Image (cartoon, rainbow, N blue to C red; front, side, top):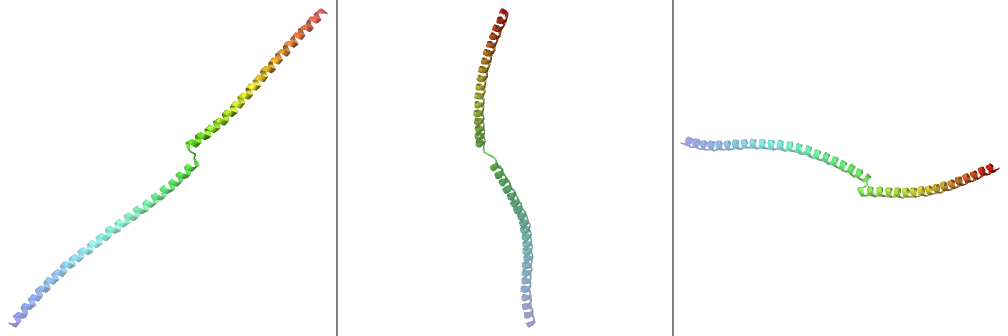
Length: 143
């Protein structure tokens, strides 16, 4: 009887032990699943980190290019005058030329008037010379 009682106790302990081993195996299987999940998450994060690093680098390069382009544009713009300044400059140049042309036209009119007066004097002188010439011819005829 003692042996049966011992055997019953051992069977109970064995059954309890078997349940615990089964539970440990389930935990271990879950542990393996957790390890696989962590490995997967790490691979996704590493891939994502790699992509994000590349995208950030690409954005930095694009930003640097835009900064250079903007500086070039500002430099170019600073070398050019505004439309208003350009029109003002042209108006000043035209006004200067207009004054210059008006002075030249006035000088030409004065010169023209002087030539008309000189031509009239010359015509009078020629007329007088011809009259005097005719008078000499008449005198020669009389002699």
